[in-house]
Length: 183
Ligand code: CO
Image 1 (cartoon, rainbow, N blue to C red):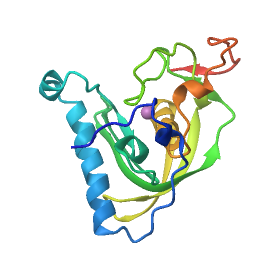
Image 2: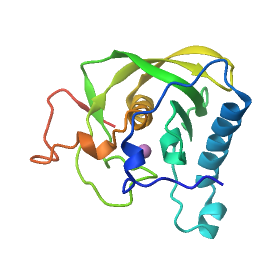
Image 3: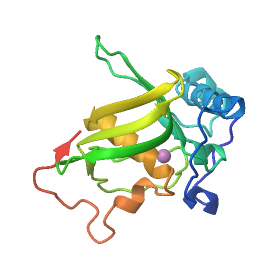
Image 4: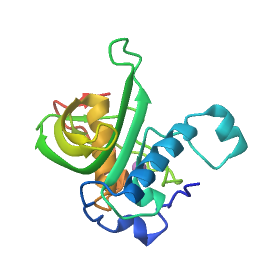
């Protein structure tokens, strides 16, 4: 089973390399294992058995021990039309960033970060991502806003060795950015 690499390990700060396409059997098996693990973290019974495991909505390959450009995302939206957001992305690139910012009211969390880092993590409110989607087996272009955009930016940051708390202003962790949206 996947063992999560914590932020105390320098490997988490390494820039990930691009993944050759078409996806090898080995890489497909790995991104499948990542999604299986992420969904397990959302299972209460699994977490009872493994008290060190926290619930997550996204996981990037460096957190699972490989510095390659792959990430998975999975969460329920509560929206009847689109009940589930789920991706297996390879070589994702943000091609459009809105000037408008947003942040999570309760701050961000990360499976690799055990310590508390209070403060606002400002992200683009809207982004467009291009990537290879491993489940669909095709190149995709994703337009995401609000929470969806935040999760994508958090996971893509992992592929650059960036962690959410790098975005918090140490001098003024809760500084206001006029016009930003609280999510
Ligand atoms: Co994270």
